[in-house]
Image 1 (cartoon, rainbow, N blue to C red):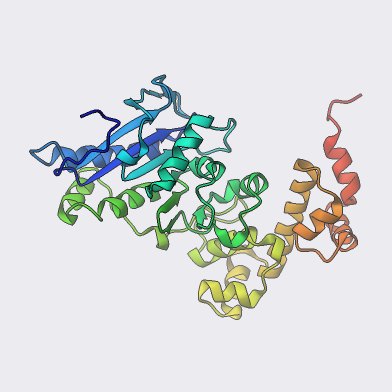
Image 2 (image 1 turned 180 degrees about the vertical axis):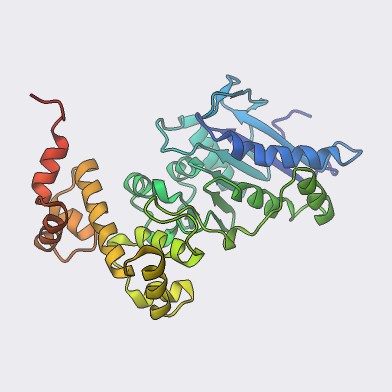
Length: 336
């Protein structure tokens, strides 16, 4: 049977097709591949899983660390797979995927296939238009870049405090240890739990639950802070433009406002409200530097009442008005 045909072999439980984007995260791909390889090795048959790396050419794809992986087949018919896993890298994508891949992903979506975006692979899925109406997990460090590229996604569509999101036939994961947890959750739908646990033991991995994990916090927050604090600062960043109230933020974390304030005082030496104000100012500074939006539009996007309101607070923090800040940011440092 041709590889591009839809296989009906009865001993295959699940079929996965991997698309590796340039500068992909090798660890994210390996987390899936190692587990799949061990599961296949545990059986005397052809194995319970069928998987291959596909692309529009058979040119090797270089990962972020420089290792190259050769695709095993051309894109072909996406409906031969149950899952299509797009593996991206840890940083903002520098190049857009080609039209052949975009059309292929749309065909897969129309055919009801489950699509998985790992690391910045969600950028490709969003560009293909196959994530509309779904929630997706975005690395908190790439949140602003993603929303600038895809403004149709609002804060309620994105997840930045947890490393993975499962929404019907769409799965997204920011990378790291959570990739293994995503792989386990997918494979558990088709394979015996005992086989999966045995493979994980051989890999010296103890799988967790993605919904209980928290993404790494920003640099100004200690990594050993309680999960509630780390989630709170990530949510404050995500909803910076809407200035969430203390009551709303505490409710999302399952805490009382007083508990949340006490945690911030103890671990960050500030209050949630003051931290949120700092985040909004940082966002305004970033937008002044990285976008050509008007100051009034930036004030609105950052949750300030108007441009004058933002100007007063901005100057009090940075010593410059937003307009002067923008002009200085645009001036090369070495200009004589």
